[in-house]
Length: 252
Length: 275
Image 1 (tube, each protein chain N blue to C red):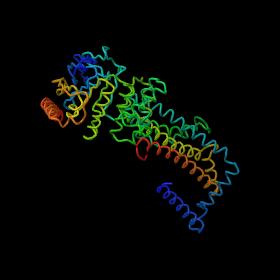
Image 2: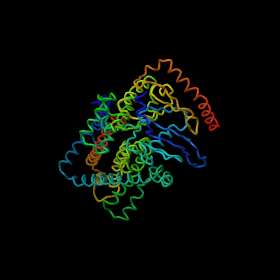
Image 3: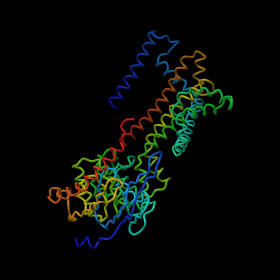
Image 4: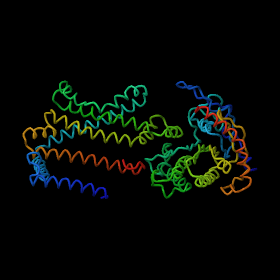
């Protein structure tokens, strides 16, 4: 592990240790926060019981579906908008302010239209994540060096071959940033939507535990969501780092 | 000179070529080039020098088929050059055009794989080109791990493997320091002698043009035209040691005599534009 990695681990262990100590000594009321060791114990018990397997599959399934749809359609729309400069000029202000608007307010509308099912959660996930992918695609295509277009012509490549063999790989680092943001936004939107109103899912489980004053369960589930989200992001970051070093972009 | 005389013949020709960029968004149209007439002899090394903005790159791109001339005709091996870069022409650009997502080996193999060449043939020609360009030990490296000069060599290797008969180089060493440029120039001479290709080099460096070329075309300020074509008279077997010869100094002095007035004109244009 690198020196930075050890420092990171030490900071995490120190924070967890301090929280453990504060909870065990009564400095923090255990009705407010349970000790980290208790969270871990409760989480193992919940996972071992298999009681949330269905919720895990449902929530992660919706997140994966939302991210996949966002990446595919976000990339497609990005390419289309990039090819139509006037449309882009018209849409740019919307993209610039999109994340300043609380799009979550449309969740009740989606429930009213599609009912209390997977669909509104999926749609709110896509609505939250897709614009990050569109913006990343536009940025990526903007930064494809013009000389590559000439290289493509020297190699007598058609528009499709030039796009697939040269422009797409050249834009890939920016596209990957879009994928990473889509994953993050997808996680946030789906868990939050489930927390507000959903028939099932990890977010709903956390909300139920909260309503029942079941702190051990609530914190255990929160820990689970945190661990999964962190692991996925670390994996994507490691991949990006490896790629960036190879391509000479420096650390992302 | 007699052996060269036998090989001489118009390999590529520009006749009455002009290039006018149409007016856009309130800006008047600009005649960047011409009229230009030029015959590139088969197997010669021809350099083009001229003041900034005189249309050197436009000339190269018109010859390559990357830009269509507004008037005039361009031929390569007696075939009209249209909107496509003809087979047999290789271009090396000033900008770093290496593919950062591919290794040096895969960069060099790119064009051959596009053409569907058999694997063994690709391997043979790529290994040969990398060895020739001194990149054999860096075959598995990525461009980001190389210096600017080595990345440019990767681009030259990528062009070289396709065995072009006409190599167009657009200020390929423009971003390199003077010493590296001299050494890269020697490599270019070695490449030219080995391949027997016709080479057209665009450069802003008079010493580079004087050292490398059989003939040097001096261009006027915009719209660029050839105001003189200078025969250097160097033997085919030459290297950077000629920069110490008196004839070299006389040659660069002669080029500068032609170019000085045109460069002042070009600066004047820039000043007026800025005002």
